[in-house]
Structures are given as C-alpha cells and as structure tokens.
Length: 77
Image: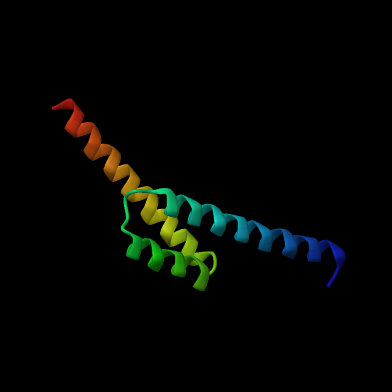
C-alpha cells in the first residue's frame, strides 16, 4: 500500500471513530430516550460501525425535531 493511500485509510478510520463517539455523546445527553433504549442504541453504534451510528443519528434527529414541533404547538395554544 502506498503511503498516500495509507494516510487516506487512516483518516477515514479516524473520521468514522469520531462520528461514532459524537453520536454516542449526543445519544447519552438526550432526555428523549429511556436508559434501556440508550443502551441498545449504543450497542448498535459500536457493533455495526458507521451504519449503526448513521441509523441512531437519523432516529435521534427525527425524534428531536418531533419533540421541538410538539413543544412549539403546546406553547402556542
């Protein structure tokens, strides 16, 4: 493997690792999910690298948007 491609692979792996850590931290800080749900989603993040984190991230963002819409409707009534 050439040195340039080695750096590319290493940078890719580090990026995936940082994305997974970032998603896990966001998941742990959110009040939306119960502890058992957070535990299951954390396992998904680490057992299915990148894909698991992407799924958890998509669900987390969707739930946060749903909560915001729900809160906005409650405040305007």
